[in-house]
Amino acid sequence: MTFYQELQLNQAGSKNLLKKSETVKEKTYHILVYLVKIAVTMAFCFLFVTIFSILFGNENSIVGVVVLLCLMVFRNADLGIHTGQATMLLALFFVIMTVCPHLANQFSPVLGMLLNIAALAVLILFGCHNPFMFNQSTLVLGYLLLYGYDVTGKSYQMRLVGMALGAALTCFVFYRNHKNRTYKRNLKDLIQEFDITSSRTKWQICQILCVPIVLCIAELCNMPRAMWAGIAAMSAILPFMEDMHYRVRKRIVGNIAGVICFTVLYFLLPSSIYAYIGILGGIGVGFSAQYGWQAVFNTFGALAIAAETYGLQGAVSLRVIQNVFGVVFALAFCVIFYWFMSKKKESDVTVHAE
Image (cartoon, rainbow, N blue to C red; front, side, top):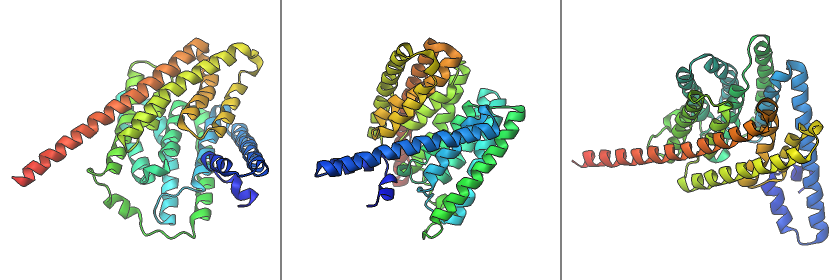
């Protein structure tokens, strides 16, 4: 494996190489490559988002985050269908992420929930056909970030331009990287494979319904940063219940640990460098291969931004409440949904037998 190829590995892949190292020299080399990868990635991400902020305004820096996330994921991940059709779907996803979150913010929480359900249905049914690719962590997360950091007027006009540029970049990179791959399935196959009795379709329906409902409830309760609850719910919903239990535990514990660590840093560090705590969290995520540790360090960036608006106590309270509510509601929703579907299946079998 070349130096460049090793740079392309994710955290788990890099740490696996470290574990397999047989000599100190080999292990030192892999550590060096890993550190270089983290440094290069952080520098590139910071530069990319900064450029978007300069071009489209600081209030649209989140656009840079969403576009960067899509670029980094879809340069390797596919949608499991013909590349040409998948590229057109990606363009459609960008249209949905640009328009629907903004419109949903103009409606009442209930009407906004209905629009969010419709938008997420397209993103998840056509973009997240393989749950183990975790495309929902890109598409749904991007949607929720744009929903939570909505803008109006001239800023929204600039957001339109920024998202159009992001769509062009993502589609170009995606098509270039996947055009030579052969796929046996197409868009029609995705529609035909929709099966309410399959684990995949049940998982998709839970994502489509639960995340907007969580957002709606949080907004009806006048909770600021409702997107945090939605992101927590999205992250916890997995095809298998045992995996969900693991995610819920790790998300709650990780966020509480992250809040504690952030609070300690907040009091130890001078106020002039509070903004860099978020960068520290990003570095921590880069070193984390396990979900629990990622939850800890993801808390840093969110709190660094929220503390400026709500103060430390308000930001910490919101973070814990929203995340606990999001994952617990998601778990309860999925338990009830799967129970209902199992009862319906038993009823259908009984009727068929009679």
